[in-house]
Image 1 (spheres, helix red, strand yellow):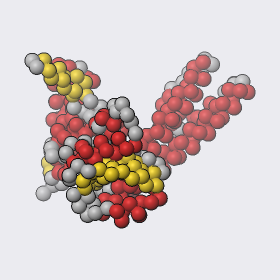
Image 2 (cartoon, rainbow, N blue to C red; image 1 turned 120 degrees about the horizontal axis):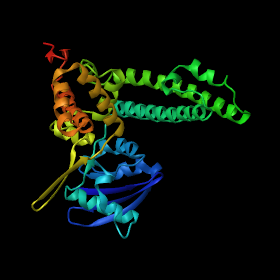
Image 3 (cartoon, rainbow, N blue to C red; image 1 turned 180 degrees about the horizontal axis):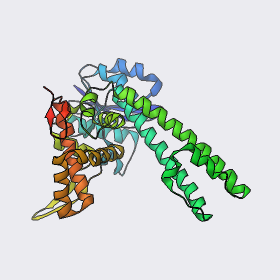
Image 4 (cartoon, helix red, strand yellow; image 1 turned 30 degrees about the horizontal axis):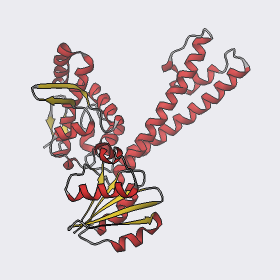
Length: 336
């Protein structure tokens, strides 16, 4: 058996080959030479490569040629970052050696459908944030000129165009024209992405199950599924909560134990969507509402909604795990 550590770059990669007797060799390949590299591989080889921009392409090319291809989570493998002698050879060797010991923190590689929906959702999120920034600029101009302004009024294109009819200097008018045109374009782009997200998301296993939960609609179901991937990758709901980053930080030392805020690891977009769905679901579910109110009374609303989101994520986990379909979510009635 051989252990291969791969330091992957945009146009080439360094490979460290570590044999069972401890011998190691190094070879650099151009990315265009992947076919040559695959011929070098043996079916009993194990490969480790850090997650980076083109890792999915590399993984898809080699995974069928070896017994295992581990994609390493760089945020949890600090040895490479902290190396005093950081070279391609050293990085590749570190990956190979830790792989041989079974000590590498791995990242999951989702299938193409989950990855595409996740990419669409993240692009849509960026466009929404950019649109909000531009809307805030219009709001600032109106307030600065003494006009009344409500941000929610600009959801309608006609109200945006009315802004241009006000008394502006030439420079401000040109600026507003550009901003408004960009906002209208972004709005169309967001709608197009949302439609594609819903259509592609509906092809993911578990989509209908999540939609049966009051509070989770088309877009939210697709985003949550694109992040979760195969629910069977998680041994229990606590592992899924940790993946979402909504578990508290814990620091233990001798007799001292400290619990901090949530870790916030994983997808920020997924946490945002989860919290938004929780806020809606607790309006319909007496169970979630009572839980929220009980935590709120003791610890405040901010911590209460996070705790409730954690509870709601447990319901999502079991819904996907056991393929539940709700007939009446508020009363927790499942279909036969």
